Amino acid sequence: DAGVTQSPTHLIKTRGQQVTLRCSPKSGHDTVSWYQQALGQGPQFIFQYYEEEERQRGNFPDRFSGHQFPNYSSELNVNALLLGDSALYLCASSSTTGAAYEQYFGPGTRLTVT
Amino acid sequence: GQNIDQPTEMTATEGAIVQINCTYQTSGFNGLFWYQQHAGEAPTFLSYNVLDGLEEKGRFSSFLSRSKGYSYLLLKELQMKDSASYLCAHDNYGQNFVFGPGTRLSVLP
Image (spheres, rainbow over the protein chains, first blue to last red):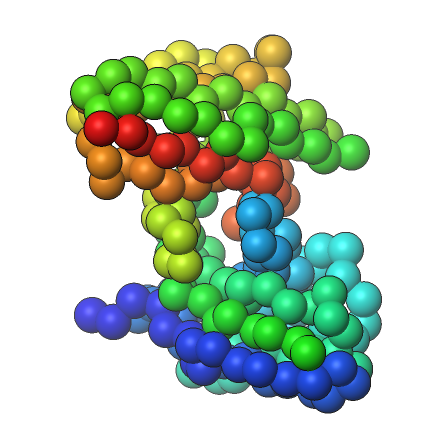
C-alpha cells in the first residue's frame, strides 16, 4: 500500500512564474491538506480539500490555490512566485472517518524560487 | 488567537533522557500531537494526547495539561538516530494542525 506521494521532489522556478505541485493521498483517505514549511520552521497550514472543495484555509494569499480530483488526488498552484515562497511543501492525507491523529505526510516538494 | 512555543534547539548525550516542552494557546482544542522530522524528510507521527496525563510508548512518552496549555515529549535512552526536529502541534478545527516552530535535537556520542 503506497503512502502519500508527491511530485515533483524538487523544483526550481523564477520569480513571477507559476508552479503546480501534485499529491496522491494514502489509499482509503479522502481528505488532503497542504502545508508550507520554511527552512528551520514548523509547517504552516495552507488549505484542506474534501469532496473536491476547499474546506478550510490558513493565512495565505489568493496566489495559493488548489484543486481536488474525484480520485482524491490534489494539486497546489502558486501564481506570481516570490522569493519568499521558497520552502518545502508538504501534503498530508487523512480520512473523515478515521482518528484525528491519522494524518500521514508525504515526502514533500522542495521549491526554490530564484 | 493560536500560538505554540517550544525551544529552538536542544543537545543531549547518547543514553540520556531529554524533555522537550511545548506551550500553546488556542480558542479550541481537539488534541496535542508530537511529530518527528528528520532533515529533508516528512514528519512522522509520534504521539497524541487529548486527555490530561502521561502517555507512554516505548522510549517515548508525552504529557498533557490542558488547564496549563502545556505538553512535553520525553525521550529515554537516547540514540544517535533520535537526532531530528520534534514538532508540537494542536488540532482545533478538525484535521487541520497548527504546528510549533520545532525543536532541533542533537544527540552527541
